[in-house]
Image (tube, rainbow, N blue to C red; front, side, top):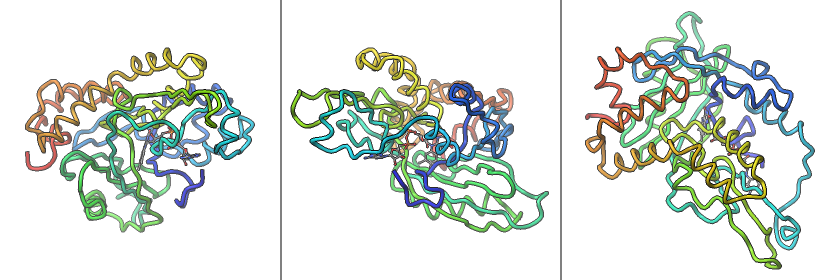
Length: 322
Ligand SMILES: Cc1cc2nc3c(=O)[nH]c(=O)nc-3n(C[C@H](O)[C@H](O)[C@H](O)COP(=O)(O)OP(=O)(O)OC[C@H]3O[C@@H](n4cnc5c(N)ncnc54)[C@H](O)[C@@H]3O)c2cc1C
């Protein structure tokens, strides 16, 4: 579906892990052909983390992925919908075909693409910061190659995203180069976790005009890291699980819940944080979960430094002033 964004895609930071590579190899594409800028060092709340992350030219990758299969575009409305035995709801945040999630949780986002104008040697590096966002949320700055960056903010709750974004742009660039805005887009990301985004499928009686079976895949069923908003790789992992179990929605449900069980823990940490109106309710386990799940994505926070800087790190989860 076309989007009213300059890149034509749904808003996204375009940051991925190198672990995306094998998924592209499988369809004859190469990750390095789409690489824009490495993020081997990412500053997370002042801590320098080693990461396997990079940014990719996602619009071109999506176009090329679509070219690897034959696509027949059809509207999915009755009575035509009834012709299909199986329809996959891969409509992301829209979840256009499945019934609502049992407990949805959505983070609102605002992102812009900026171009740094000024001396190249003063360009700021990639960074993620949470302490400026009330409740739960964070800002990010991802390099896109040359002097372009995606700078964005995501928040759960009534935060003023435009003000936060403006503040983040000023703080991140510091006294460095002038930042010219190229485009901006508002969006949302489902941080419910798959466990709270069930059901993953719905069956219909024959003859009611709809497809017999609708099965969700990707963000429509919550395969997004609730702490980080990382959804590209988990959604491909989810699609692989579905491809291996096309005729078995119950088995698919079990496989998704098992594969992404760690997302449930992150979601429940968010619930505790939001219910208490701040990080006071967070226990040691929640903080350890943050550290451990960062390592799951290959993000290596320096443990010694993280312990020394524990106050700052926990504010990433706790929100300001705690
Ligand atoms: C601001 C922002 C930044 C993000 N940054 C990152 C990042 O850096 N790295 C990362 O890994 N993840 C990021 N994410 C999350 C990531 O973009 C998504 O989780 C991921 O793209 C999900 O893939 P998907 O294929 O499930 O859904 P989507 O990529 O959302 O694709 C769903 C598609 O379905 C289409 N659609 C919707 N309704 C219908 C309908 N009724 N009929 C037909 N088509 C329909 C949509 O137009 C869309 O093209 C970000 C999200 C946001 C909002």
